[in-house]
Image 1 (tube, rainbow, N blue to C red):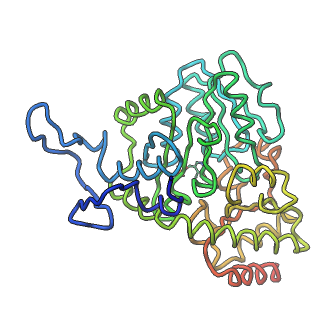
Image 2: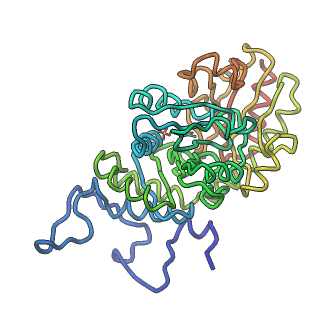
Image 3: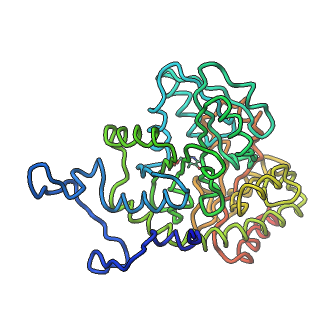
Length: 382
Ligand SMILES: *Cc1c(COP(=O)(O)O)cnc(C)c1O
C-alpha cells in the first residue's frame, strides 16, 4: 500500500535498511560540477551536474513520487520549467490556454513562445467550452486551477476527457494547491508544472520550478532538453527545496485553515465587495475542488469598494508584508494590477476581473488572531 503523503514528503519508498552517506538524516549537498570516472566506459552514474547531480536527483524522485509521475525535472525557477516545457512543441503548434494564468506565463507565451512559432488561444476554462477552441494544429491544453489571481476552478477530469478525445497533452500548473492537496496526473493530466519558489520551498528564500510527467515520450524529450539547455536546479537550492518539502503537509494544513478564517472575516467587512476563496461554500468551484482535491489552499483574492481603500490596505499592513510572491510561511498581500499581472494587457486584465480594487493574499502560518488583529486595525484606520 502506498504510504501517506505526509510520509512521502520525507521518505522515498525504502524497503530495506540501507545506511548511506554516513547515516546522514539530511540528504547531503553534492556541491560538485563534475565526477571522476573509475575507468574508461565506466561511470558512477553521474558525469556532469548539468545532466544530473545526486542532490537534485533525490529531490526529483521525491517530487515525482508526490505527484504520482514517472519522472520530475527540477529547474532553476518556475518560469524556467515552463520555458523548457515549451521546447517540446514545434513552430505551428497551437495551445489552448486558460486566460487567467500566472502573469509571467502569459508574458512568456506572448513574447517568447509566439516568436518561436507557437500559437495560443486564451479562454476561461471554468465556463468556456474548451472543445470549441481546439484547431487541427492544437497540441496541448494549459490550465491552472485555482487560477491566479481570480481563484477560478477548472474541472481537471472533464478537460482530460476533451484532451484525450483530441489526442492533446494536458498541462496543469499545480503551484497553488501542491501535491499535498491535488494530484492532476491522477486526474488525467500528462504534465504538472510547479513554481517550487512558492509552497514546495515554502520559506520565501529560494527560487525553483518543476515539470512532472507520467508520459514516457515527454520524459525522454525533457531529459534531453534539460541536459541541452542547462537550467537544472543547483545542488544547494535542491537541498533547500528538499528541506522545505519535509514540512509541506503541516504548512498547508495550517495556512489553509488560516485562509478560511480570513475569507470568512473579509466577508463580514463593509468595504469588501467580493471574496474569492474556493473554500467558501458559495464559491462557484467549491464542489469541483471538493471532488478533485483534498483541500482549498491558502490563496485568496478579494475586492474592496474603492481604489483608495485598496491602496490604504497595502500601505497600512505591517506584519503582513506588501510583496510579490506567495506560498511561504509569512503572510503576503499582493496588488496584481501593478505587480504579478502588470504585463497582462489592461483590457484582458479587467476582463478577467483584475480591477484596481483587487487584492490577493497568500496566507502564512502565523497565529490567526494576530493576522485578523492586524487586518482589523488596518481596516479601522482606512
Ligand atoms: C510564481 C508562479 C510561477 C513562476 O514561478 P517562478 O518560480 O517565479 O519563476 C508560475 N506559475 C504560478 C502559478 C506561479 O505562482
